Length: 388
Image: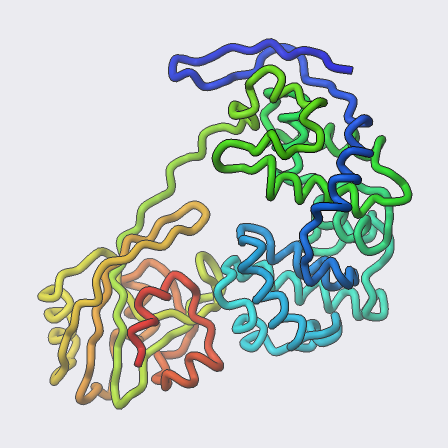
């Protein structure tokens, strides 16, 4: 049953929805989705043995990261920390190193925080209860629904942007999928129709359809869709206009100068403070602004450095969720380092960089130790590759 939504277009031709919300009866999709899933499901390591721990880790990793990339990280993580207790007991530096490259490091810290709670309150086993899963740090309705349905066969939906895109196209709905009431209504709609005998497969069928057919970027592959005959978006020719989301605010641009400082085959790294961007993570020393070779040399000489060479490493860019770093890098090779290494001094960093590091100076470490022990966020990857 469908109730039409009135539409209007702004000056740029963007779709805007006005009037009533879209209602759609999704019950007819169930059988077709499950039949399609049986023949076309993706074979993923966390599915072949869908332990709650595996599903949980994979779902957190899959946020902002492609499936193919996650496979490698997942296998490495699980082989190193095969149980929730292992995760709870892991040293933070080792844990961050395992997560290196995935970004969003607070997620893995929340994983460990939650693991400790599970060990203390649930004897190291994830609770087979949707509401209890929701109470755990870092687990929202989507992740709780995925764990509950896939691992415990509890009939709860797992609704994220991927699912909203697919189902709103099917409905031909121009509801704004970033609105909480729209997501809540979708959860309620799917909860009513989710098959009690195959809830995990049903949720995963929509996930896979969205990943391989009803894709987010580019034209959806409608000719391969098992529910094309039920899709209002296709029938009305509006599938490319859905989903509706507000335009993102432009990211803040920050210019940075990154210093790859080398002395005696060791490289300087320092740890950022406990708050803000990249909190408590190791970084290559840097300065605000995109400085020229002459400007960097002037700073070094003024601060007492002597007997060094500077080699430009080129420009780079790294995108965080709300910030972009536009960077220029230099390889600075010292023949000697002053007793007071001012560029690594926390007071200097706080004054000239606008953020704090922990109350220690830089440490000088070998390439081998950096690769094995210390987590350098992917923001520095373009310059880390010059460590030889």
